[in-house]
Image (cartoon, rainbow, N blue to C red):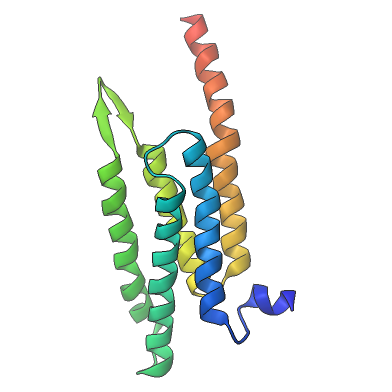
Length: 155
């Protein structure tokens, strides 16, 4: 049963792909919400869900219509990446010579990748990527703050 889930086989495959993507996006977004960022749990969950949905659609078009090549699949997935970049750009702004929102934008991009992985049935890849993203967003940010505090203390 667990092997079927990880390998992407089973009767409720589309449902599982979409739900797993949304849940992993929700987990990544939780760290952003806890950090009081504008884009949080709902945004990250919806980004992962939409990316998964587009990936499932791309895969199904290839299975039910004309066989789809890897180049054609890349042409379907590339606009997802560009679209997330566009959304991320809207989160980035300058304030008194400081850039804000860059990490949140990068987090959205990773979350879209997690969603695409789920949409294509790569649950293990999506889960590992989510864990790495959460570690970077949560634990590494604590280390980063300590370094900045230490550096500011020396100045």
